[in-house]
Structures are given as C-alpha cells and as structure tokens.
Image (cartoon, rainbow, N blue to C red; front, side, top):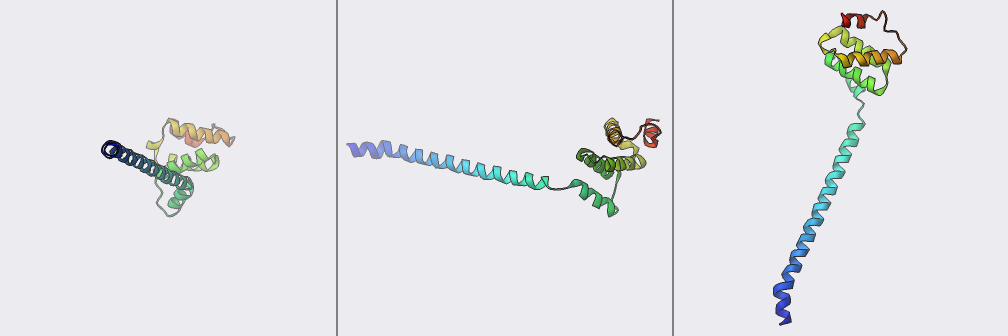
Length: 129
C-alpha cells in the first residue's frame, strides 16, 4: 500500500516541483545574462566622443547646420565654451531657422563663461532683429 501511495501521488508532485524549480532557475539565468549584455552595450556607447565624430564629419566637408548645432550643443554640455561659441556662431551664419530660445540661451551662457560681453555682439544683434 505504501508503494502505491508514493508512486501514484507523491512521485508526480515531486517531478512537477523539480520541473518548476528548473524552469525558474533557467529564467533567472537568462534574465541575468540579458542584463549583463545590456550593461556592456551602454558602456561601449559611453566611450564615443561625439565631438570628435562631428568634427571629422565637418572636416570631410559634410557639415550641415544641424551638424553644427549638434556639435555646438555637445561642446556646451562638455563645458568647452570656446568651441561651443564657435559652432553656435556657425549655426547663426548658416541657418536661422534652427535658432530658438534654447540655442540663444546656451550661446549667451557660453559668452558669459568666457567673460565676453553681449554688447556689440553681431550674432545676437542679427538674431534679435
């Protein structure tokens, strides 16, 4: 009678539990490897110097006002205000439709960081009129 009880009732439950544990274990192993792969991708993208890429694009003759603006913003956020000023001025010279309040604010902040005056600035005069 004991043999019947184990083989018909307990053994299937143990088999089901062991399968469930195996599935849960595989799930967590797969999830962990996916998370590790994503972290590696993020680390690779962090190492790209976007300013170097854009400057190479401009050097090769493929500069556009949008590239100049992206380059200016990248330098601005890196704290390279002299370079940011240069590229914002290039945007002002080439494409006035890209100029908005945010671009003007960043340009003025670059001038301020470089301790340059807003007075008699030809780019601010052009934009504000």
